[in-house]
Image (tube, rainbow, N blue to C red; front, side, top):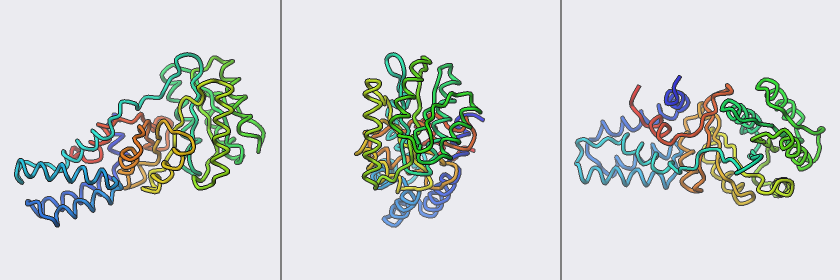
Length: 305
């Protein structure tokens, strides 16, 4: 399955809903009336594209109708072009430190798929010939440590873990020491899930990052927020709060294959200006894909089968 096909399959629910609504609106009314625009706006907001992106698409559609008339205006192509333009940041590749170890901190609320995503990223890095180590810093849940160890065994990635309920900062410290000794290219730090509203837990995350920075100047080199696409626009609140506490460098959006709210990727990127680095389109190790704005926009709006 090619990359576009993966995107298309993963975004099937969002695409089907959007496509059906837009076709219904456009075919019923060849003229651009206030009612048509309101319906189009509702369809775009319903896919969680967010108000700023929706306004941008509506403005572009209006402009096309004014310059071309009703004939030849393709709402799908216009919407796809606007989304692609908005999402193209040029910063979607995983950062690599100038020399030595690159530390990637994986953060987010409970249940977004941080542990699985950490393992999949390690797998991706190893598939391209680099070496990776995983750090089990979610010490609150014994199950998270076991889950990461199982992924490590399956993907042949070393996992550094402490005892149950160990200090996450101590585990991160040991993991940096171990990964440096192994001359690894990447260390992926699986942090505990925490609600963005819990002040003490957010402070603990800041401490974790400070300890990493003392152990290895510049660490963490990337802070990736893992978001569950099925939460829709609630993910935007999570992104805002995490970004205030620990400056984020990018986003990973999981479970896009299970939602019709795939537009939330656009809404978050539009507001916070953070690059989408990877998206999860399924359960397998290679179902985490580097984000591609063109493929994503096409899969969202394309009428190609």
